Image (cartoon, rainbow, N blue to C red; front, side, top):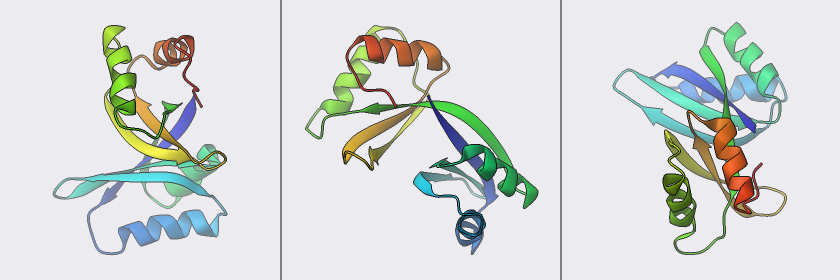
Length: 134
């Protein structure tokens, strides 16, 4: 399983620059990043090369953070690939809370990042169906 850092941040000018500067200054590599916003606050979800260090430095800088496990599953770069994965997950009665797409830097293969309440079951299920789980 992958560990994802979620950073809760104010929606104001320069916030993303501040977050990325802290990570840069601490030599933490951002592998993938996605943001979701609301009127006043947003959630920045990151996969980084050192999640615990990222959590520590972001917390020390005053950000409210959380570390979670997520599932990364490689998918074919073709029409309907994500839908096929989700069809399988739905048929197994597993829940996916949210999804975003990244890619495997080593292989340049697309990767679906999935958050579930059933992370262990989801990983095992996908592996049993022949998917490459990161």
